[in-house]
Length: 230
Image (cartoon, rainbow, N blue to C red; front, side):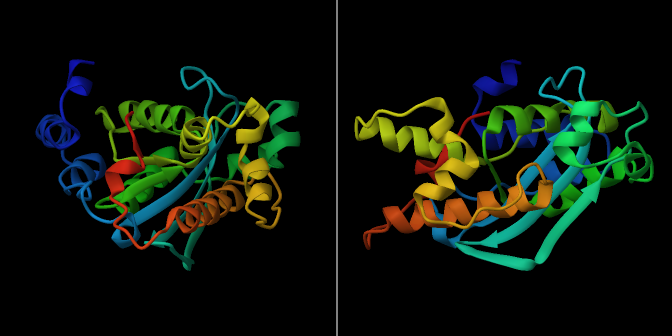
């Protein structure tokens, strides 16, 4: 816990030294993007995790969606959707929400395989998510379980950006206004089917591109102005 009090690059290097060889150490051995760089020159991995619930301590990851962004350009050729094997039966609610049945989840790939791919793709990039507390805590718990180490990253949270900017302008908002698809409506972005990991990752990437476009003014836009601390 004390590690979180130190600068992120220090924490990354320290964790890399303390982590056993493997995908997590490889990820932690790669420097994070410089927070002083312009956010339009940085690479991102837009990520969404669908889970059996919202409690990282007890719930499981059932699918992963991700796509790479180069600045504000979304590379659709990099889009991936991975179904993760879950040993226990899916609840009726989870099946309705995620449209992933017991049979499909049972045929999914092991968590360690999906997680290793996420870490490989995230190395040297910024993690882009909508509502970082849930996504990053599931990743942290998964890394602890599978690789016996801690996870950290540079993170941009599109929900936090929206909240931050609304509060700076003293604009009132409701909690529901900050949901991914309600924010997309504000930017006149198309609606996608919710609770699909890949479509949610793409939706997050498109929202971030729109948020950057709204803020552009011909001046530098350092990455540090968009980051959140995890």
